[in-house]
Image (cartoon, rainbow, N blue to C red):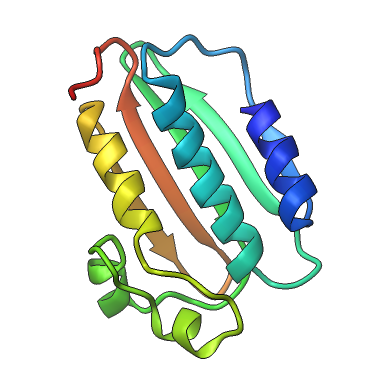
Length: 142
């Protein structure tokens, strides 16, 4: 995780606050890299300029959670229901200067679901947070 965050920060600029304990997770490392790259990149691209993105990892006996949060434009409740659909971009993303195809979050959801997990989003004026939940002990499906 630290390696991916350093790479994203070097490529896209921005500052990340990472809070992570050592967690052992049985998962596809390439898939996990894609999840972290996409969410971290989006946090910088769509977050408030000059504000750090916060990334933290949590785990209990059975589940791992990756949280990526930032300050920036609120994702409306209506758009939160559609944001993981292929080729969907939020209104603020379309109106902004950032380019995109609208496939990143769909890909993240697919990878999470292939691992027996999922992704969710919470957005308010204070923060937007994407949470990926994965079981700690499951072999990823093809």
